Length: 500
Image 1 (spheres, helix red, strand yellow):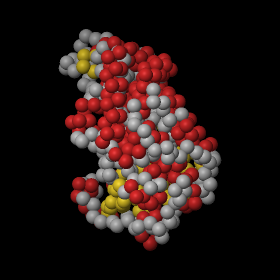
Image 2 (image 1 turned 135 degrees about the horizontal axis):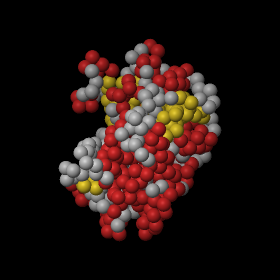
Image 3 (image 1 turned 180 degrees about the horizontal axis):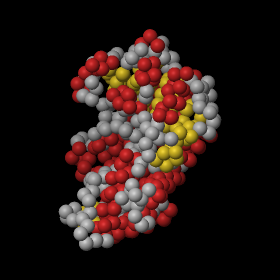
Image 4 (image 1 turned 135 degrees about the vertical axis):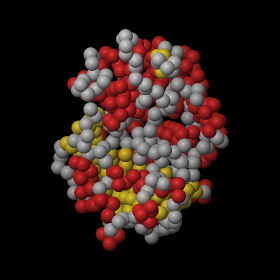
């Protein structure tokens, strides 16, 4: 294990002006608070002679510098989510008390967006020739063959073009980078908020560098032990989490039928009918557009992340059902969340790096961290089994990480796979939604047990992650970050708004 870096050892971050595009959404009167930097870190922490890669950073300065506690680092998830500009939206996630006391620091992890990118393709056109052949939910033999062939070509391209960085994209590598960033900004200990995949980064950091951990907040938790021990089983259970969230949505829709346009009759039966029809052929809408199984599966999974989309999701589903069962004088509404072109909805958090390159870092991290057999011939059988268990999301989950990682080139074995029971002085604060699709609630319960010294705040909410959407959760996070006070055991928060 590479030792942690003290403030005295680290080169200081050299902050400068941010480019104008990065601050477009910041009121002019507040732009003085922001600064940006690029910070070099070893591409291989075990062998610094191999050179460095740059990590792009943005800082929003504490508004009460005399009361400043330190820096608060943020990670949006993914893996592959770009966190550089998270300080721009910090006011939406954190109250004034946190913004007064902390510099808010966002960064793009190694390989991602503004940092030194890991590139499997020279340009977006080359990427599209490969990635465009992938189906999210391949059903026919031809679709399966084409999708697996594209994954094989993808792995070959990454082995050929991505270079040394592709072999050093583990979460442990990012944790070591984060320790350098912490020291570079002059903090003796880390303050960190991680969302979704960012919870694995936080859990990894607090175990690798417990003495350097002050306040670690993890929102929308993975199961770190399972994720790093058995990637196939983890993804199988992840598909089940999406099914649980979908069931919750359909049940809530039925219970509030007067507010949910898909609530008339039996929403569960209607949804299953739509999925079965799409499995046979696209549904042609009145305007001539053809809606595919890929589009609907990706669109539903995406909408389940955000309860604010539930009304529109219900409207779209009702339009599809009406198209299957036309009624005189009724014309289906135009689709919105289910009309968009299909795209791999991989990311567990926010961030808007260029899509052609984001996927590279997604697989680079997951295929390093998750043990997944290099047996692409087994993927179709796995998909069939998972589809029987999780009818809507089992197949698409199998044809994401399991398929992609079965064809991924060799990576560094430098992965933190435990222990997870950290020795930091302060507990880790966890938040978990009951109906989180991407990181089901049980994962948060397991995170609490695996970390040992941790406290879980449950939230009776739909959607993925909660900070910024629950005053109850936000208040407890602020009290912990500032005063290191943890909530009482068993506390349950409510969201500020209900979906219907």
